[in-house]
Length: 394
Image 1: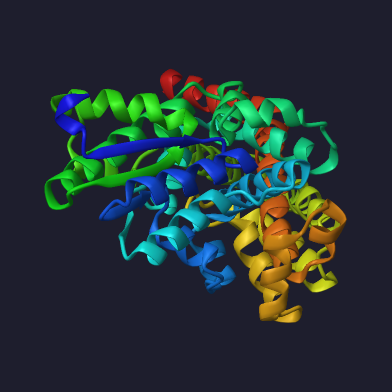
Image 2 (image 1 turned 180 degrees about the vertical axis):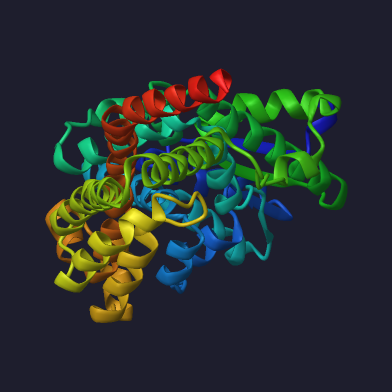
C-alpha cells in the first residue's frame, strides 16, 4: 500500500489487553501527527465520561422503541464480553486518545455516527427480520450464554455481532461492516492529505476492508449515500395497516346496514376486547402501572384502526407520567447487567411497556380481522349477493 504509507492501521480485538499494549507501543514509536480512532462523536463523549440526555417521550413518539431496545441489547452484549475478558470495550480507543494527547497529536473521529448506522440497519431489515431480531433480543435477556474468552482474544467483537446477526439478515454485514469500512477509508484518505503521518486504531474486522478501499478509492461509494437515512413514505407494514383499516371499517359499515344495530354493537365489542385484552396483558407483563395497563386496554381498538398511531405511544407516555424516571435511572439502565436490573429500572420499563403494548396490539389486530371476517363476512356476502340478485330481477 505504497500510496498510503502515511496511514498506519492498527487492528484490535477491542477486548484484549494485548491490543491495548500494541496501540500504546505503535503510537509511542511512530509519533504520528494525528491518531484516528473508530469512534463517532457520541461514542467519544461516552468514553470520556460525558453522559447524554435521553428523551424517552421523543423515542416513543418517533416510534423508535424497538430501535432503542436494539441498541441497548448491543450495549449489554459488549459489556458482557468486557466482563469475561476484564477489558472494557473501547478501552484501547480511550488509550489511543490519551496517548495522542500525551504526544500532542490531533485526534480524528473517523467512524460514521452510530445513530445513522443503527437507523440504516433497522430500515434495511424486513418485517419478519425485525420479528426475528426481537426474538433474539428477548432470548438474550433471559438466557445466560457462555462466551469463549479465547475466541474474543482472536476475533473482533464486531465480527462476533455480525456472525450473530447473519442469522437474522445478511444485510447486517453490509451495513455494520462494509459501509463503515468505506466511510472510514474515505476519512483516512482525506487525513493522509493533511497530516504527515496518521496512526489509525480500528477493530480487526475492519482492517482488511479499509485497506481494500484505500488501495482502490474509486470503489468508495458516494458519502451522501452512506449518510442517508431514508424515511420511507410507504412500506409493506404501512400498506398492510391501511388494508386492515379499510377491511375492518367496511365490515363495520356493512354489518350496520345489512345485519342491524345489535350485530354492529356485537362486532364492535368483539373488536374492542380482542385488541384491548392482549395489549393490556402484555403491558402488565412488562411491569406497567395500572393506569398504563388501562390505557393500553382502552386505546388499542382505536390505534389498530389507524396505521399512523400505536397503542404503545399512549401506554408508554402514561407510564412516563406516573413513574417519571430520574437521571440516575437512565444511567443505571445503560449500565444494567441483568434483566432483573433492567426490569426494576423505571426508564427501561417505560420503553418495555410501550414495546410490549405494541406487540399485544398487533396480535389483537390480526386476530380481530380474522375473527370479524370469519363471523360476519360470510353473512354480509350472502345478504349482498341476495340483494344484487333481487336488483337484477327488477
